[in-house]
Amino acid sequence: MEFLSNISSDKLKEICTEKLGVETVDVLSHHRNHARPEAFLVWTLGLTFVTVISLSAAVGILFMKYMSKKLFDRFITFFVAVGVGTLSGSSVFHLLPQAFHLVQEFDANADHSYLWKSFFAVAGIYLFFIADKLIKVILEARKRCKDYELKRFSGNNSESGVNNRSRQSSDALMAYVKDENAKDSLVNNTDRNEAKESLHQTHSICAHDHDMVYNNGDSVIATVAWMIIFGDGLHNFIDGVSIGASFSESILSGLSVSVAVMCEEFPHELGDVAILVSAGMTLRQALVYNVLSALTCYLGFFIGALFGNLNDEFASYIFAFAGGMFLYISIGCMMPEMKVAMENALEISVKKAIKVLICQICGIFLGLTIM
Image (cartoon, rainbow, N blue to C red; front, side, top):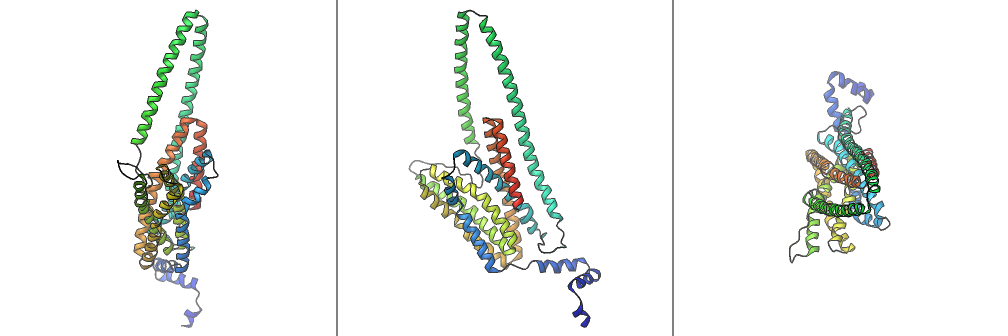
């Protein structure tokens, strides 16, 4: 007994490693490192973040009042990219590893090689995304250079031809050009209309995309309100469960998931308010309905925090589900939005497309760095 009282914890660990095997030490350290955070800290931090997330639309509206349209577009572009980075980073670096019990946060000797593997997985996604966009920008720039050279060459030829013709031939040529311009204008308008129709037809159904269909006699405001409450309400409920379970597991996990949800919700909640206002609501009504749909996040948080404390396996399944959901929202929903923003900018000019791409890259990098 005297020998055991004088032995240090490091020496005991060394003896256990030699005599009992590494697996015993790993089990002991696993249980030691998974001490639950204090309930007061879990509920205080969790409810604070849920409240901030629920009020993100109202805060965004205050910023919108002092922003020009150009600045607001860049702001939304940047925050969508930040949301993509934080959601995918939280999923790959925190949620999925915790679901598979790979995380030992407070053990200095733990194996953290999964982080490097997670990093390379995320790098593969975004390097190919950036490469794809750069190729499109380069091809579009080359195409426009060729078109410019062709127009300049055609302009020089037509200029010399007109100088060698008689006045009657010149008048006939001008009449022909006007007629062709009229046809081109008609074709362009037709193409524009077809593009708009195509845009409506290919409108994707995602976590925050809302297809509004109205029938005669329906209340526009009531239809949109129920759509927002049930659609976003369900999504916010799952976010709340994820936040509650994460905080019950560890403060670091809770902060990671909360920041990811906040960066993802902020631009999309602004979009929801814009939908409600465009449907005929006043700004005050739109904010009220938006806050109502966000209340389900509190319910989800209560369930996640309570059950996460009761059962470790429950938390693991919640982490796995939330990790999959975060990956889908970031890669399946928000990245296509980034693609559309990039293509719209490319239609205007290559310079604008490059600015949008740089903004998106910075946003993704910031989101991943936060995680």
